[in-house]
Image 1: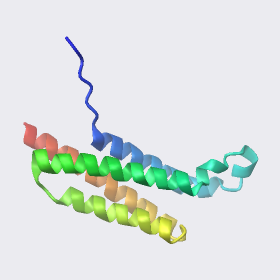
Image 2: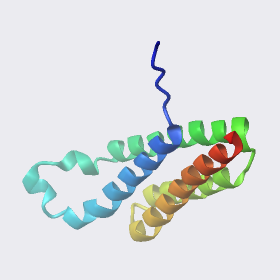
Image 3: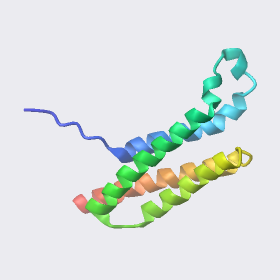
Length: 125
């Protein structure tokens, strides 16, 4: 008997969104101590874009699968699109509105994944 491991991209997307929100929200609070700790990579633009691309990858994979295979509801996709737009706006405005865009983005993206999970489970019963 083999054990088949299934990746739940919604949970992975929720985790990535929470990690991104924590990274973007808490980092400015500790910005003055970062040079003393030698952790300047956390504020590197490349790291931020990688996190954004991971959120996009997991979001697209999980939401498309849920939409196509299970529930055919567009609302999770719409929420994800809005959240992702806030995430990109945060990067393009040089994070001037970080305390507006990041929480709004996290709420939308996490809600999209949560709804996708809910709708998918509801149709499987």
